[in-house]
Image (cartoon, rainbow, N blue to C red; front, side, top):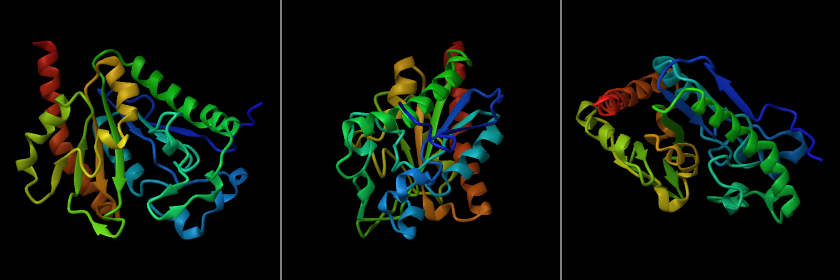
Length: 253
């Protein structure tokens, strides 16, 4: 029997939003429920990017307000279960992330993996699917993430990544608007790409329905204050809103 985790594993913001976009922020929280004994992590590790995407929830909420879009956000750390990974992926329950060992995920039994899948991943996916399906066939799926500026000791120059899997329509349209933010380093499928296994949410929730989609990655040193988050949100909207209009034009043509 699965005993429920004692915090909400999924949070819904702007539930009644009427906008065309469904926003997903899988790594919104670094909360590790007490029953997992902090997964053996030190305080600094629990607060680091290893456990969540700093700034991603605040950024997502800005976008949700501007687009009047529902936002589905994760309520527990991705180290408990990474909702952007399928249950059969080892990275759904990472034993190590960059240089940080996650001892509480070492040698997990299949029963424990199934338990976490049932308690975290399945409810999260159900809420996302319901939010999409109730809004009709023209929804755009946008997932929001942040990434660390230094990875394995090497700095990353990219500031804003626009990721896609096999459907690049929305990203193609967004990239057309890069001249509107010439100060920003924007790249396609960076600092990760589909070959890194990071597009699971796009595959499950968008590609499976034929919906246009994008995974947005923002370097987290650009999300350290409310003013910076608001600026990045506006820059993303500068790329995204014309792309949404273009998508609508093609749908009605």
